[in-house]
Image (cartoon, rainbow, N blue to C red; front, top):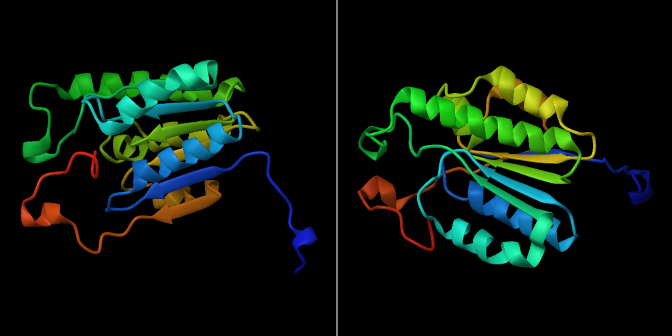
Length: 189
């Protein structure tokens, strides 16, 4: 098939999933590419409320991109993750935060204002039962026709894969966490 036989799409759905690191980093790379193309981007986080490197980076570049970049930090931290869970946050508080963050993401994705909406860790929120698969499906199917979505996090539902255009799985070969080492600032967060 010749190059001229290929077509383009007005928007795509990109999924970064899997049990290894790199999902958020990949979405930040996508955000950089989109901003470099002068797109309007919404970066919505579902889990990370604590200070991480991407928050500082986004805060620092927001004055440069002004209305071109929208950032929303939702969620209440790790949910149902044993010792890593935020013990002082109830299940109801986690669910409420996920719902509020979903509303922010859905509004951004359906508004037509953004060419790219990144929903960081939304797959985790669905897998953990803080959101349901029907909500994730509606986000994908109801989005504005010219709005691309990027959905990150572990455990993207297999039965929704038919709705996406690009899916990449980050596969863990080795991770120092398995040897009882915590995440490294600047590398893992």
